[in-house]
Structure formats: structure tokens, C-alpha cells
Length: 189
Ligand SMILES: Cc1cc2nc3c(=O)[nH]c(=O)nc-3n(C[C@H](O)[C@H](O)[C@H](O)COP(=O)(O)O)c2cc1C
Image (cartoon, rainbow, N blue to C red; front, side):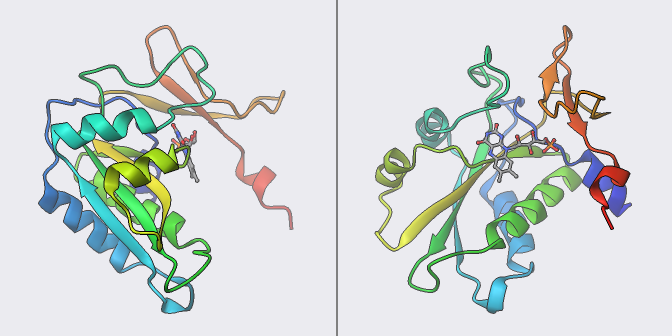
């Protein structure tokens, strides 16, 4: 079951924008992150929950989508995320946040999948503009944004081919294909 949940937890970038994701759902997802591992148990991550159309519209242009899909500028209106979780690090507690935000992100996205939602980790962020938009105090560092919503795209995993290309692609039906390396390629000893 866990394997199935992990395999189904793909990066989703097109959504049924009309399907709302409420703040309580986002709180439940962050509660999964709260129970996850943290280096030295410092727990320096902080979260901002966004699920209203006005702030959704302001945060969307500050994010970069699917860098390998050069022709695709990101989801069109109507297919954009219904919610976002901004993951911050509190620099008063730590200067570097190690892998805490990666672990937190995966916990949140697994929980999203379990609820019939989907999402995408976004690290390519216009941080200066987002800091201003959120009115963040100096001691918060913007680490990641998680886009969340009801999935509107199909994602298929593929083996990496002999050319070794790991770039994802979309086919004529707009199905998103993601190459994954084989287990034997990963385990080297
Ligand atoms: C640290 C990290 C940063 C990422 N940043 C972005 C991003 O800025 N924009 C984006 O569209 N996807 C981003 N992704 C999603 C990856 O592109 C995605 O994980 C990869 O294509 C594999 O697809 P999968 O998640 O379905 O396995 C990021 C993923 C990770 C782990």
C-alpha cells in the first residue's frame, strides 16, 4: 500500500482549479509534516497556507513550471492550483535547513495523494517578490512552495532509455511521461 501511494504521488501541474482545497485540509497536510523527521529535532520549518483566489492569483506568477517543457509556460487559467503551502525556514533557529523541507514536502504530497489531491514541489521561485507579497520578516527564508489541487493530468512513469535522457515529456494527448532510472542503476554496491 505504501509503495502504491508513493508511485501514485507524482508531480502534478494541471488541476481542476474550480475544486477548492480548504484551509483545514492544508492544516491536516502540514500536520503530517509536523510528525516527520527533522535534523537535530530543531523543527525550524514554518508554513503559510494559501487557498483563496485573490492570493492564489498573486502567488502563481512567482513560480516556474516544468523547466523541460520549453513550450509550456505553466497551467492556464482554470487549470491552476487551488492552494499553496509556502515552506519557510526560521533562521533564528538554524542557518541551514538540511533536508527537512524535502522530507516535509514528501509527507505533505503523500497525504495529498491519499486525499485524492495532487501537487508539485516548486523550488524555482521569485523569492524577492514572494517575500514582499507575503510581508515576510527578515528571519524567514523561503525554501519551497507546494502547489496543491485536484489533479487534471495523467502522469505515466517510463524506464530511462538507452540514451540516458531523464527529461520528462508530454505526448499528443497531453499525458505527462516521467523517465525513472532502474533499481539496478541506483544500487551501486
Ligand atoms: C527539490 C525539487 C524542486 C523542484 N522544483 C520544481 C519547480 O521549480 N518547478 C516544477 O515544475 N517542478 C519542480 N520539481 C518537480 C520535479 O520536476 C519532479 O519531481 C520531477 O520531474 C520528477 O517527477 P515526479 O515528481 O512525478 O517523479 C521539483 C522537485 C524537487 C524535488
